[in-house]
Image (tube, rainbow, N blue to C red; front, side):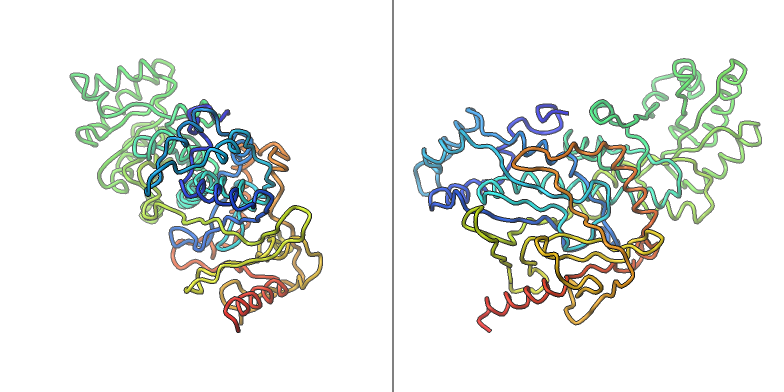
Length: 489
């Protein structure tokens, strides 16, 4: 996939907030062209009041970095922007600097499809502070939404208990590019297919779809419509029952199912899109079984999400698959992840040591973690994760058997006897991909495996158990020291 496809805007460099460019100009003019920065992408709370999140969007970061350039049309547009106080916003010298601009940053990221938790770095970017700043908005746009969607999809799939879930959200998504992001991320999160044909072409996701109510209404009778569709698509025949009356729809679908059998074909499934899905699915299953058509599957749709699916199974609904649209594509009831991009270390040039920095804020909740950070994920003997430790990436020393809680500095989590492995991996070196991104199938398999090993108490929807995330003792002490220095204590 190329960035000139419909998946992203062609003006990649202008896919940013204006203040990224005004800051870049300020750095350039104040002689900070050689200055280096380290930035981390993280979020402060899991979405949907859940216990985990699914990292997504990382597979497209390398291509974003490699293609971030300012072409002549972009420079011309920037030159035309006027400052509120009068005159041009951008200086000619800075625009000349942008003409030859290219990324030379290094990027580390959590493998796509793996699980991530609040306040730990999903992505770490190091390099020229100007380049890091210009990258911020596009990177957050890429990772925030897809992580949110993949997490929502994983919850829906978990509720579906192994039954197929198809993404039906394109018509309700925020634009065609939003629809593509939904299809990609929901597939990584566990969906089996999408209705989005363009996403199928670009990403290789299986596509699914049959007919709508308009098909039925376009024929003199429902039975005529069913027969016509069975004749047109005998190998992809799923009949929608609720255009008029589900009970009559059941009778007509059974007639067509029998006719298909006589012709050597099989009715694949029926779909119900309204009403009491638990009650109607039970009636439908009983009718088809009695008619000698037990192989016909029951699919349902209609504003589904994890809680309604969970409720349907709790009522014993014999449903085989789900089409989930609006509430998946819009990530109802939480439309944003809230991921941020914060500076954690600086240096005057690449020849100098890093200087850790942190944001204090008036709210303790918003205080950041200083330094060049890495994550160690500790697992028990069965391979189940038991805690994530944030530590100084440049240090080989420190206490690895316990960690200080990331929120509560008086709480210690013990990790003795558990094996830890580094979670962040280098994906971009000096502006060029350091490895080929994992395929979407690899990311999907990673997500499935990670969720399989996660404690069910952390996966549950109601009051999930908090997964331990903490700081290595030395990093915790550094954080306290910097906070005290900044406050003059």
